[in-house]
Picture 1 (cartoon, rainbow, N blue to C red):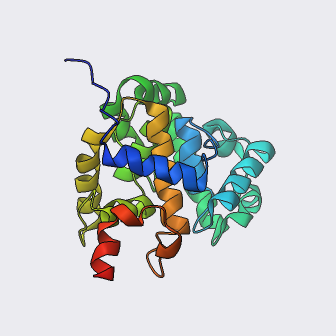
Picture 2: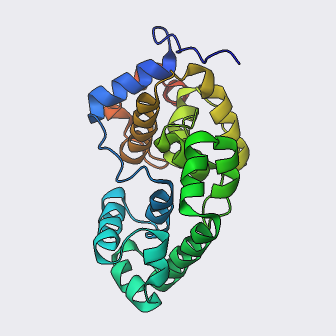
Length: 235
């Protein structure tokens, strides 16, 4: 197979979009972890809270119990729930979700999972989707942050930005829209894992802060000149 070529960043709409977002929002903070199992823990330990609270809960778990499968499996359910209580609703349910993930990671083998993520993305995606709460977008995000995912793994916030800009097509079916958007932006992505992670983060931040589902702050947006949705709405 021929080596993947770097996308021509000049005249690349997505590259220009991400550059404007970084100039506006600043460089995003590095993710709390890039380890596959820890990313599963990060997603499972909190529910419906902002990124700062999610990171706090993750760090509390890391220091109080540990974030390896073995440490989580050894922890008493009540203690585990108490440590992650600040991560939103139903801490006991979240604790059980972590214990289920830990048991599965031990069954698969943490090193087997890590090796698959780093060297066999197709196999890793199948393994990752066995974990509770990890669907196609979650698996893609874990691969992206590990440096082996080739896509952008947009979450719902980033998807909304891409659709409004006209870089992806909207669809009432979320799974279908996700796959369509992933295919649409892939030819625009440079062969630079660090850039793809920053793009993922910046699009997500922009969707959370300005390009909101309800009451978007278009008057503050650095992308209005290229936003198809804003032109349609204004026209």
